[in-house]
Structure formats: structure tokens, C-alpha cells
Image (tube, rainbow, N blue to C red; front, side, top):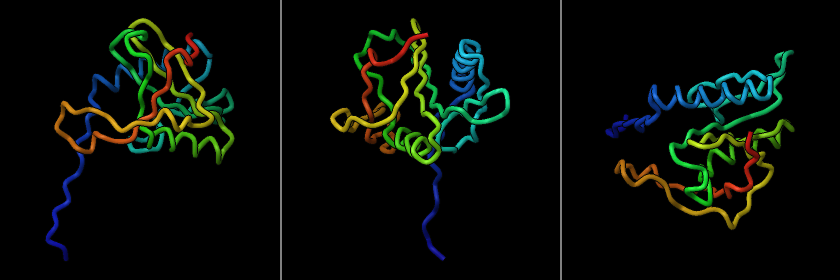
Amino acid sequence: MSDRTYTPRPVYETARTINAERQTIERVSKAWDVKFSKMPKFYRVDWAAVNAQGKVIGWAECKRRHTGKDNYKTFIISLGKVLAGLELYEQTGIPFLIIVEWDDGLGYYKLKEIDSTSIEVGGRFDRGDAQDIEPLLHIPVNKFTFL
């Protein structure tokens, strides 16, 4: 038996962030007249869009940003999350969307491929967690479709 002790990574998701994400997805659900099903906590993506017959018609990663959409030129997201969504898209043919609500807009981006020039290493430095630094994909905000 190993002397190593397993220390799980902290989970930074809070009731507040979960509620904000749920409110965002409810707005999209009403706008598109489609239901969203929350995936399990450690699933590859946040949501599955489901039609009236219960068939999955979309995979979605949903984020809430407490800033204006024009405050930054790009929206950044974990490359790992994007790769998971793209793999689901490639294996199922079901679209993968990144849904983001800013303080002044709600938009989505249908991701079909990755622009390798838009990948940088970055993340959150304020929590002192080295695991928060990872490859990120920068998506220009002007490529989002706004509802």
C-alpha cells in the first residue's frame, strides 16, 4: 500500500454560480423552446439540449460572466472542456455550443473546430491553485450569436 495520501481538488462551483448558470440556461430554453437537461457534476459538458421526444439535439457548456461583453475581445474557456464537447460532436454528430451570458448580453457559439492560434496557457491566479493554470481557448466575442 502507498504512503501517498489522495487529496481531492477543491470544487469552486458554488450554489451562487450553479444558480446563475441555471438562470442563463432557462433564458436560452425559453428563447429556443427547447429543454435542457443538466449533466452529472463531473460529466464532460454541462448540459444536453433535448427535444419534445426526449432526443438529445445539442451539447452545451454554459457560463455566466459578470462583466460587459465588450470589456474583453475574447471569451476564454478551458481547452479540456472544449475538447470534450468537440469529441461528443464528432462521435454523435450532435452540435456543441458554448453559451455565455454577460451582464449586457446572452450569446452562443457553435464550435466545430479549434483555431490553434487561439490557444494560450492561462487561468486564475487569485486562488493559489496551480491546477487552475491550463491551456485555454480564446474565442472572439464578435463570433458569438446574440439572442
